Length: 238
Image 1: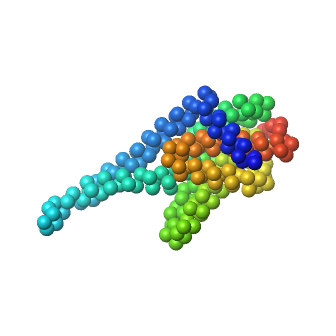
Image 2: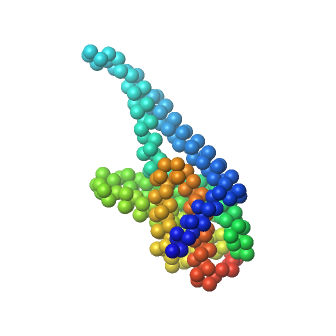
Image 3: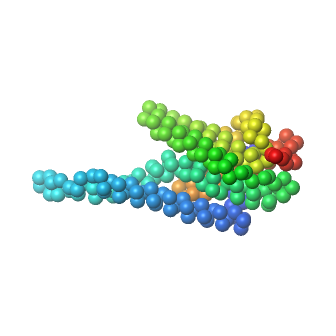
């Protein structure tokens, strides 16, 4: 299966020296971001909650202290729902470099052109907006869907992650309209790949390298799809 082949190649690429340095940087930034989010929640709760109150036979209870330490339980929940938006942000930082490294290793005769800074920034903003919207919708509907909530979460994230990561990989070679047309022709494969990435983004530890794995996997998927359609040679964007 073409999706499995792309993911397998992407996994093996993560250990290559050219990409491993990006993996280590991504791990560091991810840990730093979530520690900062947790610390922010911890101190905001301390700041805006009353100091303490007294109960009969129990004595004084420090509400701010109790709630702030209890906020540590939110860390796994933040990781589950916020990892996809974090992936979107890291995609903008690393996707271009990962795609370039993958193409130089596997497709040296079909390397693409780097995107303009403004185009790349716009793609990243669109990706982040779409995924944050999906996360909010999933959170809002979770109480009503019960056991079906994960299906909605992974399905919507699979669609949005697949759409934007593939678009970023394709835009290195094609005009925007050409990239969109190729994506629509292969929407099923792209959504399946995005859903698998979305699953990995909710697995502890593995989710830290999810953004870089996605950038590599969709670069492979783009080239495999073009190879099957007989378009192995690069198409200039200019």
